[in-house]
Length: 295
Image 1: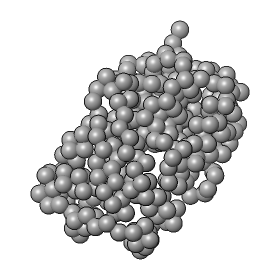
Image 2: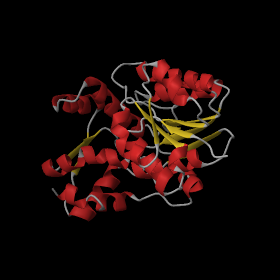
Image 3: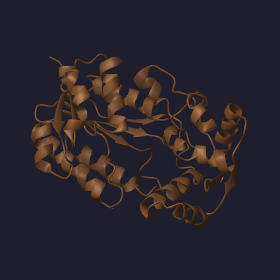
Image 4: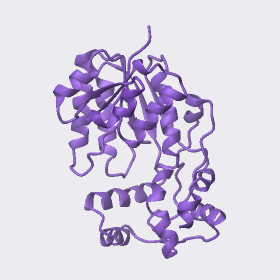
């Protein structure tokens, strides 16, 4: 008898790709997949393929209990409620409690590397969620995603345009990974029949500094952005001046501080363990986006 798999945040970027890989890479039957989101009407394309769609609002426990009914393996994709301290952790705990009541057999959760040793503002949310899952009595798989390569595309085109890349990382390194690779590995873990407790850290094959990344960009587009190392305070002032909300500024500054401290510099082979593949390289990732980078 096949497992019923549920993906929360199914309308989001990661959720969409997890479901894609469940269907196309791991050939899970559409009827065995439940795609859950706050607005199920956004999932009409999946419904047309035979995927079950349900409403799951992390601020409404009733919808969570209904959504999780009959589910064997539940993937909780961490929510994007980062603007209010403590809100995301409360949402995750509500989902865990609903999973217990619904009789879910296995929980999977998207976390971050070393949440117990991190300067990143949202690390306590991940650590608290991991602890709540571990205390739930439900078997679990924790998937700790490294910083996405995709995040660079939010700023790199501008950095290339002005010729400067301001950072407070000061040569610190991190093993960046693409969102697509994370989705592939998460889908593999969700589609498996494993019932033991496990924690995987999903990273690229090597750690890179901002200087390494700038050099790779130069290889691809022929013009490197000049990396300018600044203090946390200077970076915060620049991001604030660019109009970013305070919680985003604090998050980005804390991420650079965490890289500078070496807390992100942990390379793992867990991606290959789960998928049997090597993770995409940064060079390959950026080459696919050369047109955007070149402007």
